[in-house]
Length: 288
Image (cartoon, rainbow, N blue to C red; front, side):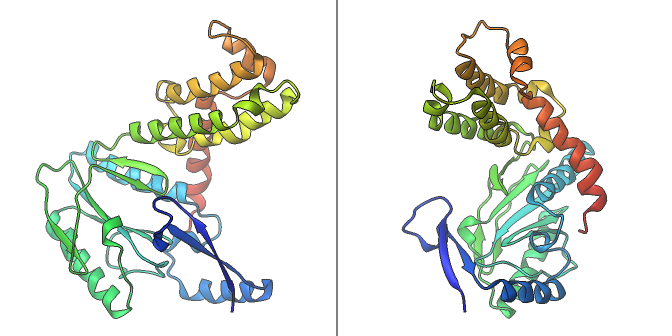
């Protein structure tokens, strides 16, 4: 037995589906469950494997569709959300798995529906329920929309979809993710306004907050946009706003000099490091 602690995610808190259940179990049982899960769960299920992370998974999806778009190829994507974590789906279906989120890829609407039919049959056989209202179909480089079904439910077509914190859009650029990161960084900045503006707080602690909290929020998904300083500029404006608040200077201040004095990273530098990391580490050592 275990104690289940519900942790709210987002949306209506009256809906039980908007909570993530965290099991509190003895350490020995947790280790035993890990050993069993390693033997049973398919290797494509990234969320339960060491040295794998959601950032690499989302970046992989982004790169697949982007390279196909450059070659003027159609890419049909279905984002599937299950009620529980998925151990694996039929291995002949192209796609990605991360916990209860699955991505099905196809080069045509017909092939995508064929894959969804196979997933429906598999899900029914194993009594796995799909959250149809959280699923979506996105067509990249395609002109015609198509109505598709999964487990006898119609799946909506979307121009935008949030996958593992990334904002995917039909144009397949990073603008949605950058805009979302900027808004989240601004929200964190306003929440910490009293801390950053306080005269009784050490400057070193304020800079530590900027580097360890604001920058990671702003640079999440930097693997997609980190090689362009221009794309990082909206995020950098929020970081500079926090820095000016700490340094108690106006907009006309020389920010390069202030960053140097405070030993603070640029947002573009932090995002660029993420690109190097995923190219040199994740894509070389990843097991999936």
